[in-house]
Length: 68
Image (cartoon, rainbow, N blue to C red; front, side):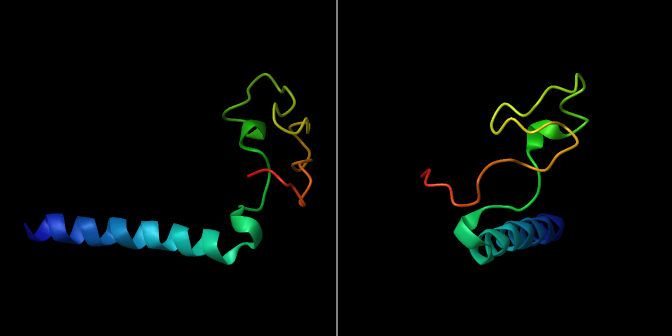
């Protein structure tokens, strides 16, 4: 039971940390590049299907997006 409570507390701490990071970011968006540009996910070197950025470029998505 003790191990279960410790595991649950650590999981709750991780979720709270992610929630705080999203809350603190402008418009609740993570900074960085497109996930589809990861060399682990995109082995063929295709451009991002969302914004069109090449694998060696940062995300080309405009920062003032009006999407909900």
